[in-house]
Every structure is written in C-alpha cells, then in structure tokens.
Length: 369
Image (cartoon, rainbow, N blue to C red; front, side):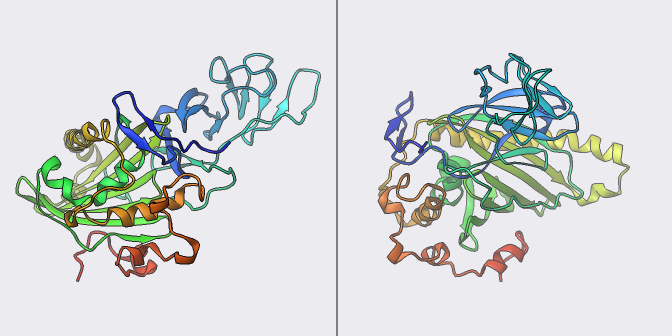
C-alpha cells in the first residue's frame, strides 16, 4: 500500500501539507526497558498497530497485530513460549521470522506467515525499520561511544504535526533565541549532508553558560546529540528519536546520559548516586526545551513554499536532503525534489563542501579550525 500524500489538518488546525507522514528509515518502537522477556505489547507505529514481543532468550520482535489464520489479535492474549509467539485463538505458534511452525497438536508446519519488521536494539532502544516497499534496511544504525557515561534517563512526549518538525528545527537558527533564550548562537561549521546523514554543530550561550552541541542525524527518526559544557567539565549524550504513530501524531523519545570525568575516580556506588539527581535535572531541562518546541509544532502549519529570510538558515537544503526518505514522485512536493537531470549532492546544495570521511571521522565537539 502506498503511503498517503493528501493534504490534511490535525484537530487543532495544524496543516500537514502533501508530505507523506510515514518516511522510510529507522524509528524507535520502544525503550528496551519497556519490553521484558516474555512480554507482549501492542504499539502504534506508522499509522497502525504493531505487536512487539520479546522471546525468553531476549530477542525483540515486531509483527502484524492480527493472526493470518482467522484474525485474532496477537497483542490481546498472545503469549510467548520460549522463542515462539502463540496466538490466543488456536495456539498457532510463530517463529521470530514470522513463519508458523505449529498449528495444532496433530499437524506440522504449513505455509502461514505473519509479517515481521527488521529490528535493531541498540543503547537501550528498540529501533524498527520502516520502508514503503518493504525489504531490508538501507543503512545501519551507528554505534555510539558511551563509555564512562551514566545510566540513561528516558522520557517520551506525544506530539502533533509532521515528523520533519524535529530535524528541521535543528538547523532553524532563527528560533533558538526567541524560543530557547540562547545568545551568541551560530552554526559552526554549517550543516553537512552526506547520503542519509546530516551533521549539525552549534555553539551558543544559555543564561551566560557557553556550550557546544553536535547532532549526528541518520534519516528522520534518529538523532544522537552530544553537548559539551566546558565550564562544568561535563558532557551530555542524548538520543532524540521521533516516531510517527499516526498521520498527524508522533512520539518523541529521548534518553540522556551524563559524563563528568572527575567522577571517574569515585567508587561506582558513590558515582552512580551523584549521577541520579544530575541526570534528573538534565532530563527536566531537555524536556522543558522540547516542550517549548512542541507548543509550536502542535499548531504549526508546515508550508511547502515558506517565505524565508536569510537568518532562517539552510531550511530548503535540509528539505531537499529529507526528500530522499519518501517514495520517489509520491510524497515530497515538487520544490523539495530535484529532477534527475539536475540532481546534485546535498552537501553541494548546502554550499558546505565537506568530504564524507571528514564528516564521519572528525571529532564532533572539536573547535573547527
């Protein structure tokens, strides 16, 4: 089924435009802590229900909600038996690849199969690959270096509007002062685009406190944010993960960790005890900042042809980059796509000629020289 490309509006009048609400990419389905071994959960994902479960051996799986036999809902009464998901109606048993391996005490396996989604569990998050045409993931998720960081503190926010609001916000340099009260703000160096990746570096002050931030963005559903607070000798690492749940709704998950090198000399129990209140404060601060954004996003019209000013930043370069995550010719407006005869690398469009190897290997928080 092709994703919808209609013009819609949410209950509060926030226009969505003709963008599909369901781009391709990796999107968080749940935090790992929400799915214990043997658990079966029903979630909203890309406009429909999905069933998440974890085998007794610890593997997370995601399948269509209804049994292909006679339509029982696997999330309502379905159980995990070892590594199999058991239908509550006729006890059909499904392996992790979706195949029915048993459908009754006197019958062998047949050709019944339920749809599954590629999953990757990484850094305490269960990510699911969504592709309009199905198939295998087009790119891998990155491993983050979290050695020495505290345990993660996790939070979720329900949001309305289009899924691009979050990633576009990262390069919308005109909003940082009026919304987040940042001063001395600059994108330094300019955002870089390479394939499915976008890298954003910014420097600013918040209430006089200087900080630098690097955002490593993979598609429209994954952002790894690292922030350095030199005066406090601290570094924050956060995952910020927007996931569409419906045509006009999405959930924004974020999980943040803290590292203070001076704490490394402390015994582990004492170090962890210090981190608990500090990560709580960081979580509260980040949630406050995101809430300031969601107050805009929930009522925002997402214009296809915005009347931009110079201080807005590279918004249209971002949108041309984002267009690749929608089925060609279906979902992205014409002014956000490039004709095949005019196709250029996104980093050229952004006028930021940064080689891919520099994007991937450079220290994200080092001062550009």
